Image 1 (cartoon, rainbow, N blue to C red):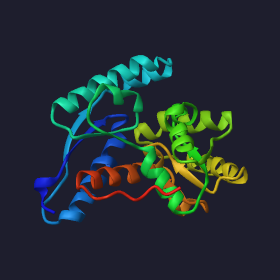
Image 2 (cartoon, helix red, strand yellow):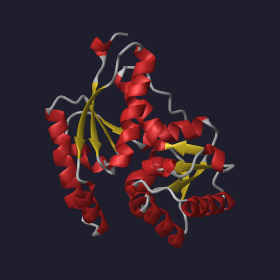
Image 3 (tube, helix red, strand yellow):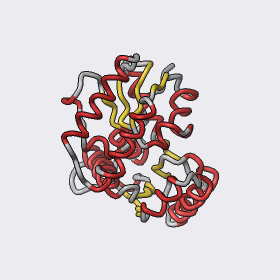
Image 4 (tube, rainbow, N blue to C red):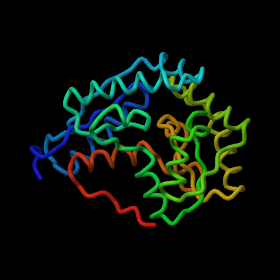
Amino acid sequence: MNSMGLKTLGLIGGMSWESTVPYYREINETVKARLGGLHSARIILYSVDFHEIEQLQATEQWDAAAAVLAGIAQKLEGAGADALVLVAAAISNAVHIPLLHIADPTAVAIKQAGHTTVGLLGTRFTMEQDFYRSRLEQDHGLTVLTPKPADRALVHRVIYDELCLGHVLPASRDAYLRVIADLGARGAQAIILGCTEIAMLIGPHDCDLPLFNTTQLHAQSAAQWALAIKPLENKP
């Protein structure tokens, strides 16, 4: 394949910008590995001021947050994006191009590894709202466990108050490992790192349970879509 057939990905960045960097890197590395030479991905990036989005989320103004993201998605479509690399399924009705949902490649990888019950770590919104969990449970048949309420608050706080600011603290790593151990004791066979920043804090060498990095899986899947490579089959 040459780059003439390479599709253009629309990426909403800045949520947080710390998470945009690994997305951009992984997509480009996947394209380069496939095409070689000086090839890179075709990406249209719209970077938001995350403070504004976070304020809407924190006050549970979900419709307002969705409206902002939908407007950005429409701009990306108008700029020539062939698909959107996003988490927010609520904006899918605002555009006519495909939405490459973050949960799908993650679920496929988990099931291919033979797991049926997983622990989900992420922001409070990811752990408690339906947009991610229901996709895993209803569309892919997985059983999803989340931390206990106090632990959900801890996981969320570390993401927003530390990792989004680039602070990686050993004490927070220990706290996350305790939360993961509790999920394992409750039956989790693997752990989903459902927020890009979490991979800054913990990796496969830190715990016994398998970790599924949604950023890496999502970015690789998006790059493969852009390259017109058939994705891994989602077998029941």
